[in-house]
Length: 461
Image (cartoon, rainbow, N blue to C red; front, side, top):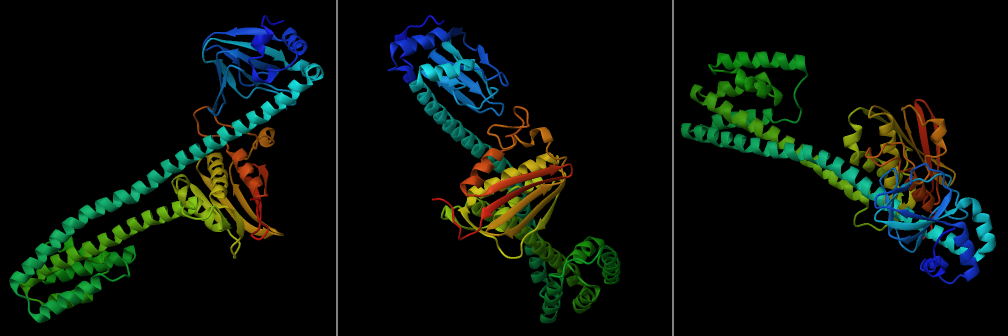
């Protein structure tokens, strides 16, 4: 029996206006407990066998995935009537010195019989608590996903950005070298024939054909070095390699050198060499900035920035944008096998939310394979549905946890080792779109199939 007055119990909202005899019955069957600051009152996986009424102080419960819930005085927590909880999913501590009432769950049937109104209020409390837990979990998932994507994108953007900056610095040196060579040639006063020969050779060096294969390149380089030596060019090897890489051929080089005076030959080669380097650097700069542009485009399409929240979404496009965003995690050793339906599969949906589904499932697949294996993505129509199948070659989901992977807060990772499975979030999103997720798993072949109503079937507003 608890040494607590009725008036004190009435400070808790659900007990506020209950009759004296009902409060007395509750107090007769509850136990009063004093908690010191920091004291643990429940641990993860303890039997869910008690309801807790917080009279004074503040309690804090932490999930294995680090989600935190705070309970303040005047609140009921712990297991509640009609709850299907069998074990506590949290470890709870007193934030400050606190006083609680513990009511055993074994007496819930008696409680509902003696105080039916309290039962109704506790059910409403349980629903509110579930909504709050879901909200916190969704927010945590969003922040965790954002953190992962931000880290990955920072890495992916850093490489082309650093390459572009490095190329720009090299370009300054190449332009200075080109200006110097042009100045030297202007001092020699070229004839029109010499100008034409040099320009024609420059054009042949800046073709789009690219360098030849290794054996052919070696043969051409030897021939170019021989031609340069024949025309008295000192240190011809310094020019030969870059000329071969630029696509230069022996015959145009021989024609150019044969059409210019001996004092013009070396300054002309320096000008051509500088121009070739500038052309190569511009190509590198274009590739780097194109990579950045592709990432920015993928981010905008992945998040559906500046677009209507609900629209007909091409699932293949969403999957490809997700793969682009996750490239940092995939390129270490994951082979992607695509088997997309030849025509677009459209789903009227919240596109950014579906991308979160693909992200969570692909992220889990890569983790399961420890970053190395085959990721299989397939799309196909099935009746009025579009189906996306995401599979991996990992060790499979252990049979003992297959039935739990969609549970809220369930994770296979230790504290501090990532965000868990995220499959509860994926399931909520798919169900919001009136779809379903099925999973099959054996070693070497785990498959998630997501079925969504095709465009025209619609989703709830």
